[in-house]
Length: 387
Image 1: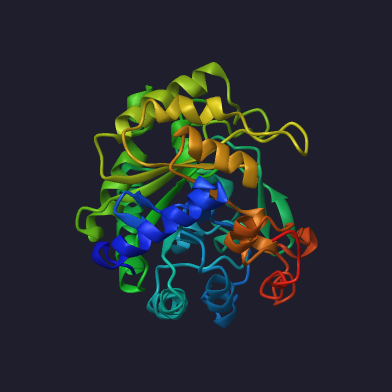
Image 2: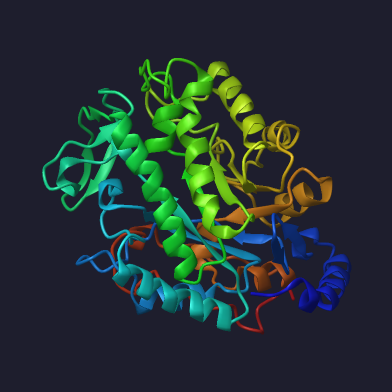
């Protein structure tokens, strides 16, 4: 990873290039201890390519992330912190020595190519399914079905009523996040991000429609956020003060139980403010889904949390080259992350820099396994316009 000394001269050059190109997105940034040569972040994207036996990353993972090492920061796909966390087929873990060794090959390739990479830590909680857990019930904050779907070996399957986690279960889960973070450090990652969005374990605890607990992990918004804050503290511990990134999705909607109403947004306001008292490297904020293709993201949604959070902020969801540059130029975010654009455009930073057209991904290959639609997207030809 680059050091502050080696980047000082390079940052001057990068800033000049970004100014000349009229793209603040291409300028350097200091993101919670991460020194980035540009502000184009690769968002975590589940691709279901792990070896089914042991959920181990393969050589394809090293090729895939190596192809995208020009990103200012890669946030690797959500990765299981334990066997109890599993809730999606062929997603890698970070809880076994075999997995740690395989991830070390991935991070080695990314670093050899000049990149920076952190790992997102994931637990599905009640959004899992017995098919992932040897027939056992998944566990969540309360015995309430989240009414979503789990991607099982038989395809997308409706969730079931989970069992309510005991306090011992919660303590073991916090410890699992801490151990997974330490494993990520040993695997050569530059940091970790807590996956606290979607319909999964942490958001289930944050959700008063799913969390009916009456102990210290439920009953009011302060107690409902306790699990996340304990996980942040545990995950940050191996990183010598750097902190852990946190990804939130206040505007996430999924059926009747996950909805971005005023009560939910008020809870997230209080949560984001509380994060300032914990070792958070950056806040990675997923915005609302766009109503229609071609719509621009609402910068006001990001600005709401910019006012509440004291640290660096990464914006996500629906941005293109123009809207991302405008957001950075306004000071509303420090970086912008891209998911689907990075799937089909391994050279996304170059395409942005030269104003080249972006390729579209093949959605039919997102979770199918194999090299097709994973490591076979070409970089743009030097003859491609308009650059």
